[in-house]
Image (cartoon, rainbow, N blue to C red; front, side, top):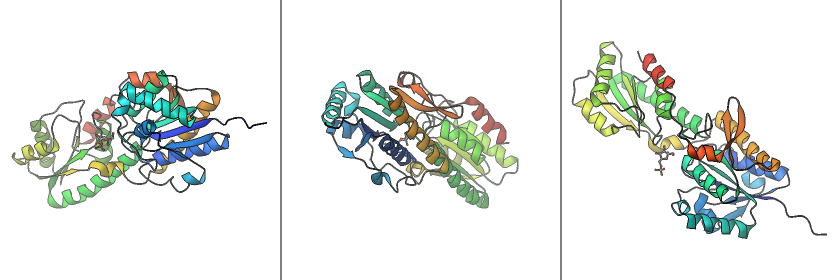
Length: 326
Ligand code: F6P
């Protein structure tokens, strides 16, 4: 008698990489194998799905990656997959490979892609992975905590030199259209002012905050500017430098440093929990959902809701950053 075909799970990472993606891949693969499923890695996200770039994954293949940043499966921002032709080609390649389901680890755009596939009848589970923490339906995404810690370490270092020289430092954080990283950085780094895409600001306002910090006897000022705010960091630096605010200014754009590095303990745990839960969903016959943190548990959130809603920054934290800057 021939052996029954094992359920074959495909797994891919898509969009901007985030620390902890490897931990999630490892958790998916090992949970799948423990349940007598097969696991297949898709190389370079949705581009690899369209190209049929697959690689079977064993428990050993995912050894030694838990602590590594980036994604060993590689990633892409696939323009082709945004078109229905690309999605059709991807489904064809999945069928040729005999994939029964797909786990997609990525941010907002990638989870929209996951939803598009599920609408076309593919059994898909999403796992939120993005430093931006802009995915609706989960309190936190994989990679955000590590990025926050990187920002915190960097600003702590900048504060040392800012204090020594009586300077105001303008620090640009990532986050695309979301002010999450900037607001949280404002609190944990004790910034004098935070600029976010959600709240337009003026150069004068920022200059006033810096001058105020100087007059109150501070030895430095830290301004966090989210990359998506309405003023570029360069314009801000030039504008403030041209005014008499007490401090001289310097600027630092943290850039992709924020995406790299080994994941924190929090991100390793989060990624492991979500990876396990994603496979459990398939075992239960659940699909078309994302693993999301609600309260303290990992819950299934419909991909339809994730794709339809926008996560907004919590303004209570924005106000808190302002009060604590006194
Ligand atoms: O989504 C993660 C992110 O790092 C954003 O914060 C940033 O806007 C974008 O990706 C940068 O993308 P890329 O690496 O393609 O330049």
